[in-house]
Length: 59
Image (cartoon, rainbow, N blue to C red; front, side, top):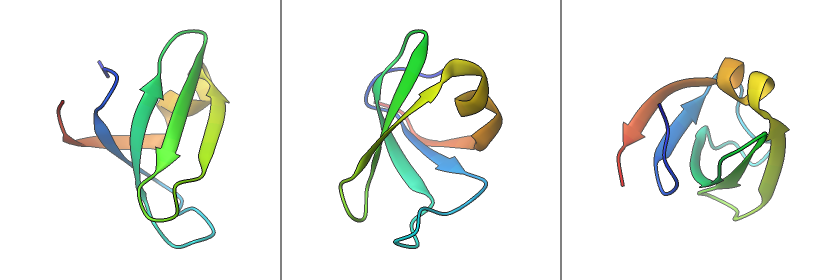
């Protein structure tokens, strides 16, 4: 699955335009950090797994 530090791509872009995120927390919630603007988003596990399309780079 996904590990902390992995770079992932999402279906929808962040308002800044980036689709690439770094996974910073895994558990009941996933915490993702936008690689373009640095903002963080916390999503429930189920919603995060639906939003992520693929792993771009492994840590």
